[in-house]
Image (cartoon, rainbow over all chains, first blue to last red; front, side, top):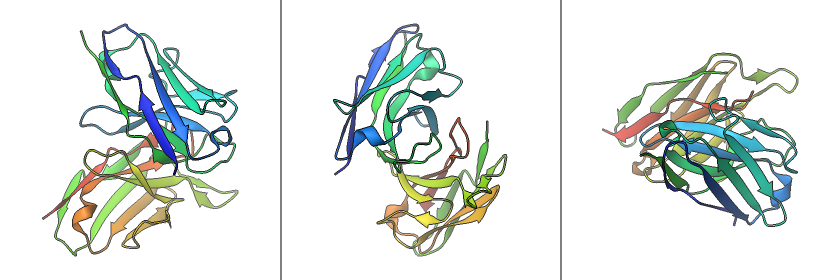
Length: 123
Length: 113
């Protein structure tokens, strides 16, 4: 079974940093683009970033560019999101999601998704 | 950025009746070289992560009941749920994957009348 398990969420003060992790299993991790998405409480879905199979290319939504960094460890089947200069508006459940198909393209939809990890930015 | 606009925001449908959700994109999602619409639908049940229902505007994912169907092309798309079941209560989202940033509609909440 394909499985994605996020961890690392928690409460952080504005301006602080946090590193999220996603443990992947059940598929050949190194052959898929991977994604981080988020959902503020009671709100809709927002794609945050994605990263190429070999980690050499990444794309970001404008609101996090320069503050967040997506990375991956294909040896350990892990995806990461390093978040700096966190703002109240970054508070959300953060989901790790795999591209639905293993093609070398950042333009894809997402399946499956993990259960998410909650990040709360508050003083 | 491509803006995705869903309508309605919510709807209540009787069990066994049809639900129709619309999504409009701010630019065409049809890639002419392969004649595919880079468009997907998701279902998010309460307390759960989203689940991919349909990709390429009309291709149902494996295991998705055939009462779910997607249609449309270019900028206008529709998700139809025929014979609504209790387990279909959820929020439904559309998504474009034609260009980065990948963007979603605001969601449509489907409830039982």
